[in-house]
Length: 311
Image (cartoon, rainbow, N blue to C red):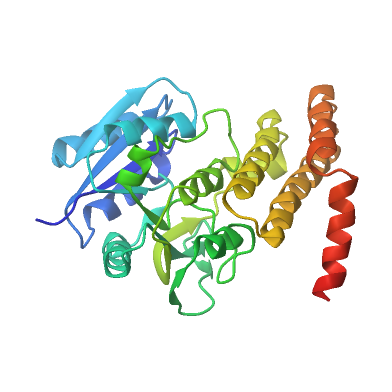
């Protein structure tokens, strides 16, 4: 019997896009899946739409819960999953019809612990605005995969969840969960946590498995338009990723990249605060303490010497 894939979809006020997302799940060429729809306190018709799909197909399960954020919703889905593989999807995008099969084929033929897949980016009208720049199928070491989390090579960003397939046994054995106190960058942090636990490497297959839509109303794009005090959790995610990198590799270049992530997050937070004329003493205090602990003089000197050495 084919191994079951557990699809987890957190849902919050996604009624406008939900049918498109769930229809593509239903039409998957790989059919042995279960899909847990976690309705995270939605105020629109998302809950009733999910109930309709569950009534039509028993592979759908709906969990209605009070709003606690996307990380808590995904953790609820992990807890309810029974499949051998875990796949995370967003409610406002769509999984390509051969997406699950492509990811599973890459996983089973490579004997690796995680698949990094390809994706296309679309505007709200569905027009493709970016796609993988070359066709690639290769095995990566853990260090190479970490490098791609900071510097994507074949697309704009490789920290997303929905272009990856995870082994449920790795998540379960290591009690991996999404950090519920992190509201931005929680996806890449989870991938980094997962990478610290693997033994058999990473397979990268650039074949697109997902359509990612640029919705201006999403939390990511909305951060540019309106200040969100929770954006400081992006910095906390980068700090945790740096600490994880330091525990699993002695590669100094990766250490520098991880610190650069902290620095870039600080710059973005300060830019957004300036653009929106926000003054938050506690956020500024956290930034100063983080800079002192992780980006002190020793880091600046080392970074200068490393640049000279690389040149």
